[in-house]
Image (cartoon, rainbow, N blue to C red; front, side):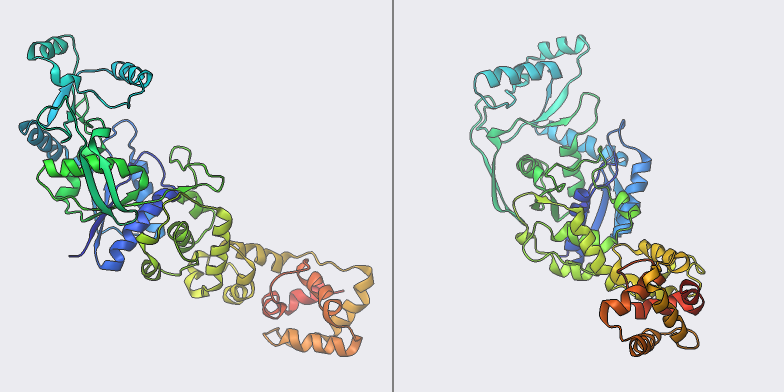
Length: 453
């Protein structure tokens, strides 16, 4: 069976590199096995979900090279969630609770004072019909909790109830449902938290594998129980490690930490970002992988570390530079105006790509080509005059530098740095840079002569 996976962002901010890691793991898993990738917007948070973030997520995934086979929005699926709630009520496993947030906080503090875990005590199940009616007459609206199957008929006497699964990343996992509070599936305002809506969607969309961050491991126990209560087989689960900043801080959409849009605007290559996001924190080397098919071949979820991994932009610079050196002019030509480099774009690219980290730095080199202020120390003026005299006739080409420097050496006896450095500084204003043999044809005869005394 071909896998069906999903990436389920909330459109409440921009995607950061940690979100991209989850998206890429799912995309590559589907790509490798010939499966499908569903983009599902978890947009039921009416106050924080915004259409501009929906568009931003689409844009960022497209930039990465992820093309969903299908798109879904939770805001359009209210009927499915209402039906699931009614199903659970009919089975007697969804019950109304009337505690306010302040009531629940007081309970947690009492439990903490007694050294007890902060697990909901199911007090709402002990309310009589009259007591419930009285609370509702006061204006209280219930939220609804899912009764976890961790008892033998008496919910007030929970027992150990283990949920097991073979995690694609972490191996055999066990969660004890007795250690958890019954999760809220319907809020007071009738909306649905992640637990219910996500499980219903996974059932209806035929999701076969759920690959997500390891901050969801504990949730998985309750979700598996909910799949079972709804009469469905749960998907396979894989919980990958999370990314942090280089200093170890957690990533945040709210804070804009390492957002994909900012990385794109900074000029990084999508495959450099994808390579680092996927391969960091996993077994094997972190290499600059040139395309998604090759990166999919590298994907091994069982080799992903159990510990958090640091995403260091300095590593991104290294990978980006390596990818650039493998890139042909035909693959980037469209990023520039047709006449931007006076018809010498390919020559310039071949000259400078070994010396840049990001493609757009090519413009910096072009500015040096057309507007360099030559460095001509008085001690080198006679030498540079001889060089001007010996410049080979005709327009410069790939052989000009070799012919020119041989002639200069034979006339002056200079060698090595003493021969090359004054010429480089006069022509580029720099002591180091691209190979002069490649750069000379881009500078052109007219500019060369203008920079020599």
